Image (cartoon, rainbow, N blue to C red; front, side, top):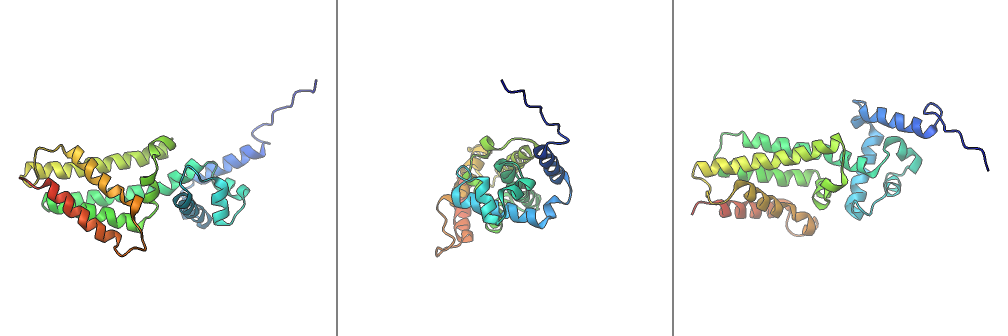
Length: 223
């Protein structure tokens, strides 16, 4: 029988050393401004959009960026880490834009229309959001950063529901529809755009957004 192999210590294990350096890069404040890291995240967005998150591999991302798998491993250890990095800032941007609109001294219908217009504008500016809309991220993301993404998404829904609730109290929206249910219906309608929208088609994302805004306002208008 062969002699048992001695386990390598963390100090001498190359893989542990790579993991340590990757953790240091993740925690470093300058990581998001790193040019190569930005290229990796952007490449992941293109791959996830083209192949779907479930079908994509880290090898696909490395090939998209034009680097080796070993080089990619220096930056990220799992596909999930890339998904979290890809979605963190866009989801936060969407939430902060909504809160800014919700705080404006406008009527509830005006705030709702403006909020949904910002929603469409953000989707057009940050197409990686389509990855968020096409994947069940609640099942594929874990950890504090993923919790932050989910919290931002949940806060978005609560703020939009409060806009509708305030409109109902002011007599600007109907009162027989639960604001939370209204948000699910409205956002569901907007989110489904990713399934059929063609950027090369005759109508822009903003054009469809305006039609959807009119449908949302009409459905909430007092009888």
